[in-house]
Structure formats: structure tokens, C-alpha cells
Image (tube, rainbow, N blue to C red; front, side, top):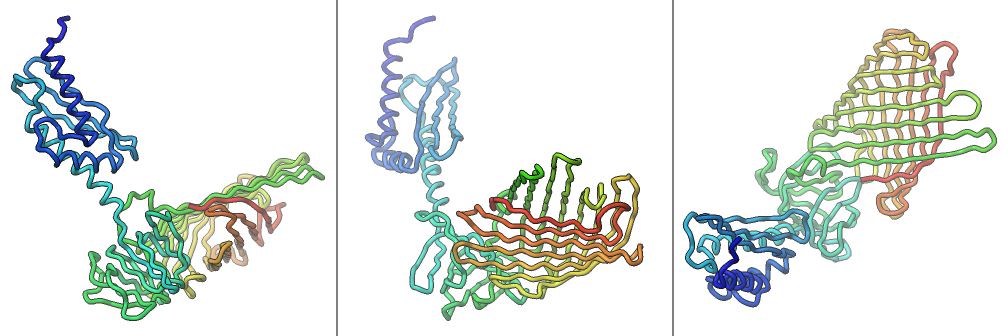
Length: 443
């Protein structure tokens, strides 16, 4: 292989030196006007972009220039390639097209972090403190507010005097009314949220002010990836009794997502008990639900559920149903709803006998929150299913969970569960209940 000529060697060395000087901000790139690219390079480095290679090859008549940079905040590598089809008599001279490409790339990459970091929403507290950041969501009496310097804050809604944002909001009021639009201006009175026409088709055409005390939910209308809209929790518990060597393991998990018109949820709950005498027993359930919000706090909900309970002689129960109901109370600290509908079920007992049924479905749920640290969350639910196809049969499911926050997103939970069937499989109990403790994490 022929060794490179002294001219080519000097040219490559000059190109590397010129490029290094350019990226360090000490001098412009070869062939570029002094000042402009140097300032861009300085901003580039300040934003976290670092060049690590510059390569020029000349296979035949094809010149290939490669500018490769990496971003300190991302594992991705951004590359820009420029090609010219005619030989360049001076291998040290950059083509004009590459000048434009390199400068454009620096400008774009420098602008991106600045755009991403822009947070212009403003919260003013009742004590006069002013916080600038980005509104994320109001749920259960707390506003999730993301800031550059203090991270994500959770601010009690009752302590906020005014809120302004250019983001398009979807606001749900205590009476079930929903309004949409940005809030770029302060309300005429303290404690008022002023919404103006936004991008939503349901946004008000003229400014509308709503009392902040009547707002129960608030979120921004964005096109985030679906997984960014998920919320849920996971809890695990274990207990052991030495006297009779009884071990109990329980797990519960929930995941769901909410939009301005509906919410879906997947809930799992399971418990296994084993001891030296007798086989282990299992209780578990999986419920999928889809709730559609209607005006004036009404809703309808579809339910698909599967369950197993060895204590009741139930090998598998499959249920599909629907309810129509209303939120009787809905504010920053309390939610209470009731509903009624129909359900069809198929049950397989441990002896492999099967029975089908049509049942009325009556349910209610209550949730109470305490926002002051430590946060406390109480959930209670009750479902009654009187049979329409088996006269006199009544089933019921009840649950109660008490959660107390230990540190951010980590909680301690006490759970009470009860299942009742006045006509269980022959030879099995009609009632099964349990109390468990667990540690959990919410997201």
C-alpha cells in the first residue's frame, strides 16, 4: 500500500487541527467567517453536545465527509453526512455545502434543549409565593407541577391563589361540567381560573371564569406516548405463624389510564395460604373495566372479570356486565359513586360442575384522601349480585384498603376482603374473609 504524500498528511493534520479549534470555540472552522460558528460551537458545548470524530475519505472520485457528535443527555448518536461527486484539488478545503450543513446542525441541536426546557406556567400561592414551571395534572386535590430547579412538586389545590398557562387544559368541575382551553391570564378575582378559546372543539369561544374551589380534576391536552399516561400501584405482603406453620403471601396490582371522556383499569388481587396440614388454598381475581364519563357526573361502565376461591369451592368464575351510575360526591378529598346494571356469569366448581346465571349488579365505591403529610388514602367498595335466574341466591364482594404514605410513592397498606355466597358449592363455606398487610409502590 502506498504511503500518503507529505501534502496529504499535512492536509489531514490541518483539517483535524482546524476542526478541533472550531469545536473548542477558539477559532472558526476553515473557510467560515470568524465569529458565527465559534459562538454556535460554544452554545453547542454548553448544551451538552460533544464532537468526537471528523473523518474525510476519498475513494476514487467520491468525497465523503462525516461529522459525528454525541449528546451527553442521550445515548443516541447524531450523524451528518455530505457527499460531493467531483474530486477536490485541495484535500484540506471543506466544500461549501458542508459549511452550511455543519452550521445548520449546530443551530438546530443548540435550539432543541432550549425549547424542551421552556416552562412558562405560573402558580401563585395564597401566601404570595410565585413558582414557574409546567402544569402536568390535578388529581385528588394535588397539582402536579414540574419545575427546573426543584423537580416535580405536588401542591395542594386549596393553597393556590392563581394559575396561568398557555397549555390547553381540560377542566372537570364538581357538578360534572367540563370546560377546555388555555388560561394565559389571571382571573378577575383570587381563586378564579380564567379559560379562553383553545384548540379543542369544545373550548369556550369567549373567556370563562370558574371558581378554583369547584375544580376536581385538571390535565393538559397533549399527545404523549400511551405509556406516559399510565398510573397504578403494586403491593406485596407476607406473614408466617409459627404455631401451626401457616404462610400467607398476597399481591395486588393495578394499572390504568384516564382521558377526558373515559378511563380503563386492570386490577389483580391474589392470596395464597399454605400450612403443614392440608393443601394450600388460593384466592385470586382479575378485573378489566372501562368507564365512560357522561354529563352531570353520570357514567356507564363495562366489566369483565375472572375469579378463583378455593374456600368457596370455586375453580373459575367468568363474569361480564355493565352498570349505569352517578358520582354522588366528587371534590378534592372525596369521591362516592353508585351504579346498577346486569351481569352474566359462568361458574366452574372444584368438582367440575358448572352453572350459568344472570344477575342484577349493584355497586358502590368510596374514596377519601388526606393530603397533609403523611398522605392517607381510604378505598371502600361493595358489590351485591342478586340472581335473576336462580331465585333466592345472593352473592356479595366487599373490600376496604387503608394506605399511609411512608416516603414519596412508597406506602403501607392494610386490606380487608370479604366474599359471600348464600348458595356455595356443596360442602364448602358460604363466606371467606381475610385481613392482610403489605408494602406497595404507586406510579
